[in-house]
Image 1 (tube, rainbow, N blue to C red):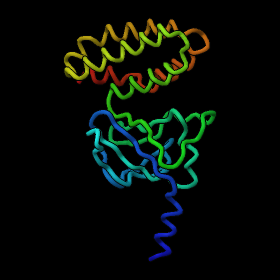
Image 2 (cartoon, rainbow, N blue to C red):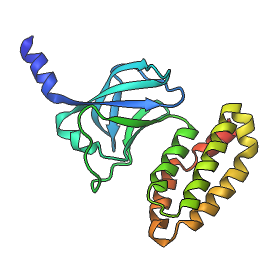
Image 3 (tube, rainbow, N blue to C red):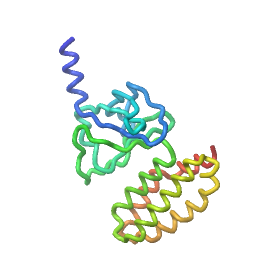
Length: 189
């Protein structure tokens, strides 16, 4: 029995905390995938002192270097998957916190934040922050309010994408793919 425990401990060496802003249907033992390969599983699910949902995930030793700055864990149609892995970014240490993406606003915030940090124009950064705050307020009022305002939000997001300049345009488009369709999906619900 002790050998089994030691073997399992060796297979699941790193633990990361995934924080979700909204609700997420998580369960202990749920597999965590990366490109259809199981790299770990949910060890614990709980609610933190901030009243936000979190999941502790244990990662198999051989996959621990996939967790990099800027990555996130998405939950879509019951599948838990590591996304946004960039091998050029530093690896996260054991015990680090990672963003959880479960709803439309999580995806939008993740995408905007990922690009925002690389924008040097302070006015464009402020515009991003203001738009995200407005989107958060509309989302908090409910899906109906968000649906009503989504066409204007989408127009402003496109306008900002055009302001980021050629050096970030490609990255913005890649990030946009991460959450493309999430808000539209919420718009139809």
